[in-house]
Image (cartoon, rainbow, N blue to C red; front, top):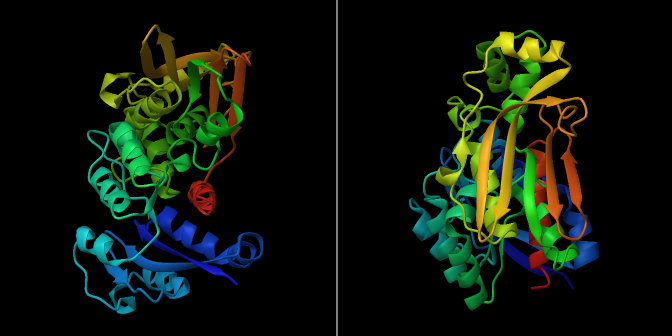
Length: 342
């Protein structure tokens, strides 16, 4: 007999919709392998209203309504205007959160996750803000309530970085991290190598949906900085805020510098570095010229790379090729699978 798993989604943009499609695609597999049928009790969005139905929402209809730029209110059995009310009445066991990141303090996502856990839900997020600004608090709250706080999708999408260290590398002490963690700036630099100006490359990134209307979070290094802060906080055990990361973005790089590097057999990359120094971590994000001997040299377009220096395995390198909202959604889905046996 199938067990019902009641879930709710806060955030139904590209990632939330990709998760919905994945849940539909994996419906039979979830039933056969895990004995679970997913029931979506609520969907809260920033632009398309909220749907709340304790008997379950039709995901196909929800996706169709959003594609038509229509409100989800017609799928709701209960009028709901505020997220607090939504959480109190959705009767979910698991909350997926994927709203836009706030680099400064992680709100309102941090408050949403705290409330969800306090109400007895497992909390799964793709949002770097609450991870960096509330990791210790959320982890402690989850433990107190016998729930899980999971966040695999926050860095390098669905690439299993956090779970790799959690499950496969016991007692491996992380000494340093380096890599390319922001795929948007990597794409922009690759386009500039092909001859586009900085402004043209940014517009191209916006046109294909990997850069926001305001691209400052990417090109000024904030996204890379908060990802580096997340890795330091969780994997190195040293809480770090993005404001504490020495940060310089790619805004001031000129086309002439890009081409000059190529003539030298080098490439410009926005490189993240974090090094343990005693009980502290020194972290930076800045453009660097890398040579062909560097593992970072051939990581182009929207791909990313992370190198982890440990005391047990030396340097471990993970490369993610051309991620998408689908890969981010998979990270959320994988975290959900881990909650099934909690």
